[in-house]
Length: 189
Image 1 (cartoon, rainbow, N blue to C red):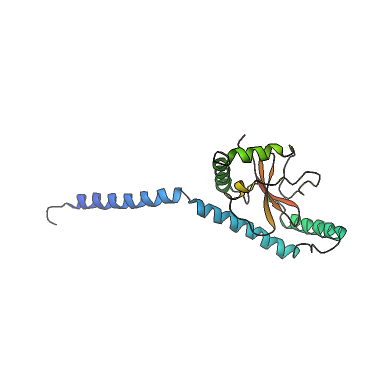
Image 2: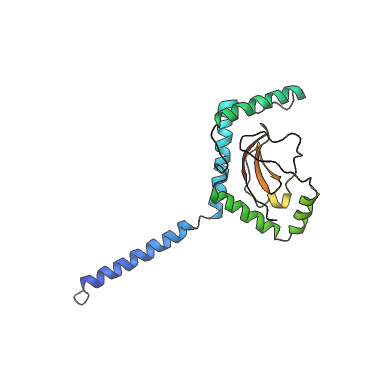
């Protein structure tokens, strides 16, 4: 290696390092969709673990309607106390919200887009100010989320569900009937 200067070797080493770092950075800047979906699922599971820790199991569906409603209120109150200070975006982080919006936009612009739009138009228009930890309004119909749209969103653990409320995608605790989190303007209009 007589003909190669120390400076040339340093330049080659720096080039090799910069190529390696650049490749690693480009991979880490693009978080794979599968990783984002797993993050959402982990956050949803952590919520349910917290709920179970502070409030026990969901109300028994075999009880009387009055007993079920009372147990649901008790469950939701315990969850609210445990989640004091939680805000929109704690589960649907900016990265997760962007991913969800991308999935919804792709689905609506896909082959089933017209069917999804038609299904959404048939639903009653709803305008409410959403807040995390609020009860899902009992007077507001639980608009079903079109199955073709659900197919492109990450699966949720039992007890949580996606609901559409206007243009917002709501993560709803079905057992406690509360808004766990939501994505503002998730539906492109």
